[in-house]
Image (cartoon, rainbow, N blue to C red; front, side, top):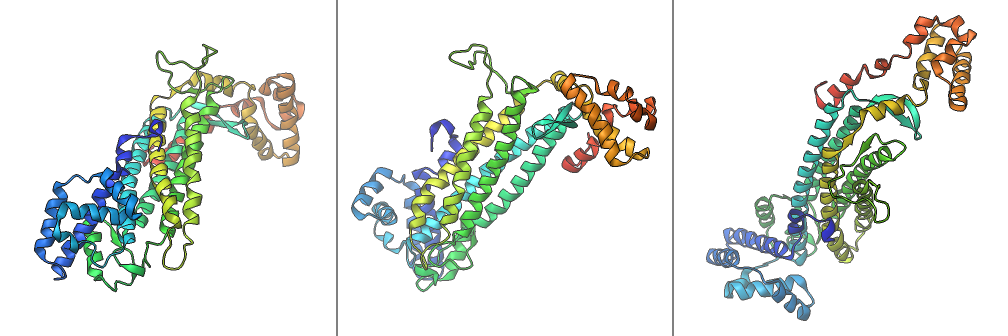
Length: 436
């Protein structure tokens, strides 16, 4: 985790203190279940809770023990025994390290998911507000980076809203898939621990029991989770890239907010660069990069190995912390985005009516001209706009073949800008449930 790209709430999910507190809760809940089953004394379970809850787990002390034992869970249990006293012998009855480690990771990923879902909710709210603000702000749509036909900036933002709505749905599903509990002992057979202990711990920790866990929770779940984060990051980059393109000097239809006192370049005082969305593009690359090692973690040896362990120590915190920061940054960009409707209209009109070429093409075909001839007539006049800076409508009105098929009044009508935006309300109704 890099502090520059971190926010405190998500960082706290992955702190050593949080991890050890979760480990303790897993062990203590298991003791409650074991006490109910008569495996350990109820008084021992109470003592474990009382002393554990009152304690602050000493990270330095656990690290000291681990340097000797070379085993993190044993180091924690040794430190816990120093806190609890003799009743600590009842902790970890019939359990294996992965029961603690994997269940804890599930809790952390679920908590991280809740933060990310809240991030998406904030982004969706900003996108919806700005989409309705610019529902009818006409701009040029582009394909291959080239002017195509008119749309509205609100439709662009509605597209992003729909995309991030799907991201939210995927993350909710990924959270449910990752939030499983395994308290099944060595190789997952429950030989030394009753399955009812797992049920109890799962309920207490807000998880569901893993149907079959070998000695670990199957890593296909984790692969899907991190792949989902990668898809969200890709959507984040797509919107960031759109803003970057629209902020180019030659376009300048939108612009990241430039704060008083902000500097754009150490050499050129005039610069106002899209630094936030460029940063988001880089962060998205990092989040996506964590999906591949998660997929490689699926193929472990037999009932378990620990080749996945070092990977998850990296990707769990880094992917969630980075995406949390990125989504919050993107929300700020959208919330404060400067939008220039006049520039959008000027850019749309830059090529003097070319954006209406399809309407003229269709009108000619409906007037009885073959599609091949219609395309030829429209294209030859369109090329004069590209190559000679002519006005498209003027050239069409001067073309006898065009006028032979379309009267002047009908031809002029095909240049009505409002024609292209007449179904914006329908799009908004589909996306937001209201048309505006």
